[in-house]
Length: 120
Image (cartoon, rainbow, N blue to C red; front, side, top):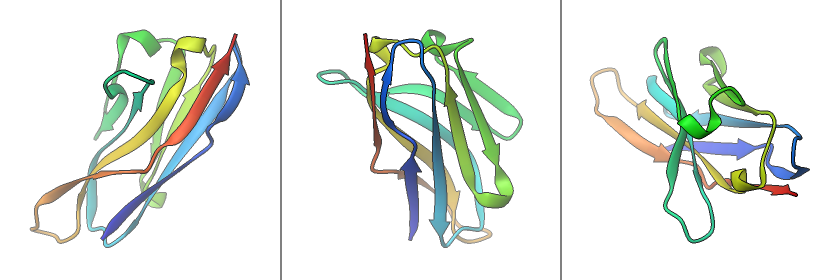
């Protein structure tokens, strides 16, 4: 079993910054993609940023404000969020494609989420 545990959410004023962390633990042979999604009240979950190998993709609405990074040795992905806006409010979920065995399938794993609230 693989678990993703997020941390770093909270309440911040518009223009402020937060740094989210997500650590994968359990039976892990390898991790392909790691990324962040978010879900605002009444809206669908949407991609924020994802890193796969050396490639990084950002949603247009966070480009220039958010930075995703990854520490493979720690099985951890980070999301540095700057210039936060009230529209960034939501639950932020960590996601990873994890392989438990060398030749096993990749499993799509989600964290429980961490709340980010940006006040105006």
